[in-house]
Image (cartoon, rainbow, N blue to C red; front, side):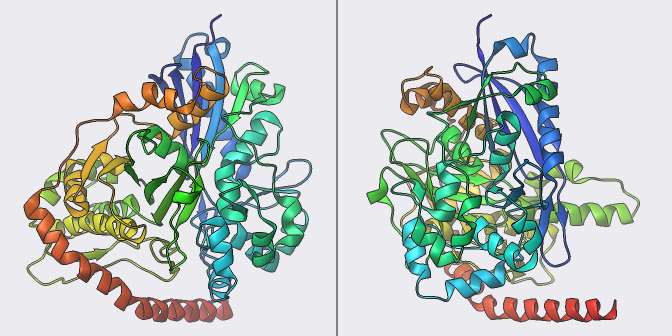
Length: 527
């Protein structure tokens, strides 16, 4: 039977998806499963490794129910997933500790101590990436200090997609994107001894997996995984790059002729510019941002990342839902979401400033501050709920401009993806704030598509990624949303106040963080 299907797995923080594509990039079917994570009182965010694998296998079984003779038709599987975090297993492959996620803020103090040292600049210049609490390096240090038995019993430290690749193939590996922004050199795409020494993790080097490139290497689906997933033993499996890179690839960040940017507005906000080669990487003086290898020879994505994007919208809708439910009106977040467009449209622009730092982990781009928190500025009695909704949309757009400014100039065109990309109001506000064209891909599952594209190249269906992009990506790009000159003028005038506000708030955020720590310590003593 003809092998005419590719499966891309995208394991997000709260939802795991398996998506089937034909060899030319048409999406044929999708299966998804919710995943849970646990927030701890001390700022941790943890996930169950085995549950994540079981749910992934479940989505693959569901996919087989949708497409006739799926197991026989699958040419390859490719897996990507949530970035950062630490997924520990022992030599037998059993988890030794719940996974620490990118939302985990417990290593914040460690990051502050390392960042204050002069040699951290050298680490930044090698990795191209600012250190923060969500990364594996700082989390390994936290585990060494706080969970020494779990770390001592571990044989491998992986990321989410690496864990799933292991469960699919029995192979221990990671990819160039996550390996290098955490511990390596984006120029050589190898681990750096200097980086490990600066972090103080020389003794943990044995935990780091070998680095493989999923556009060149595949492994075979194991018999046990095939049985659990309802697929055929020996099916090729490609290890994708981290989810943001696969999403950027599937959304059009790489363009052989132009240099667009790419913004992902999902739970987090990722704002990227293309560096065609290592010499095109421009590091800022502040030591912030990420440099991630792309699955294209020499190419990197430089990015600044907001810890929270649509999480801010979720907070607003959940607050409204809770209030209505208390009044006896049963409305969920999903029920209220369709109303958001009209709420925003009914409010005049530029009435309030909103700092979108709603994550418990604070902010990581274009500044790093685990104590950063969200807030409105300029509220008065004449402002209502709709003004707050619009301010959140504007705050997300100002955060994007803040990030692109830290990387240099704003690209002439932004390829937009993520859940918020479906909002006409947000696209218009973003285009006017950035003063550039904004194009949204019609592809709904760009991350899974980017992973599947890597498998398509690895199998030789395309000679290179350029050929694959021509067929999988370019036709999906929609018409451009253009900046509105009147809105652009308003936002250009307001943006300096946005920056001044977040700079002025930093000592207050720290004071409030100290206060919360004192309350927590008092509570622990009472227990």
